[in-house]
Image (tube, rainbow, N blue to C red; front, side, top):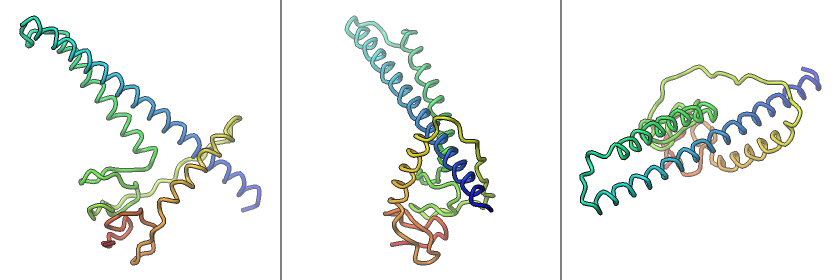
Length: 176
């Protein structure tokens, strides 16, 4: 591959990482906003319950409280959908133990659970758009911070492991 071909590929990959970072941050803001809405609903419910108790009125007949509860359930479902999208963008999956691991990890670093083998899908590249340079720089900064967390190496397969992991994500070797 020529120098310019490699340069174009590198810029395209950096552009894709930057776009992913922007999307992840947008989704995280949505989650925070929805969590704030849930807190507001909790406050409204608490206020309504207090007023009912203060007046010695029964709580089970209050439709406003029921409506707020239904809205909280709906918002929680929206948050779960956003978190699924965040896992996809971050190339992560959930382990049976509740730990979040990389999409390509074959073993959970926390509990050693073995995942089913799956095909690795390469992300699609995109053309560089105007104004993407700052996003590229931010994505590179984020990537370098993330690489600082992966300083340890598995003694068995030499794959990088997160600090504090109990098992290697690549081969399942216990690290303690």
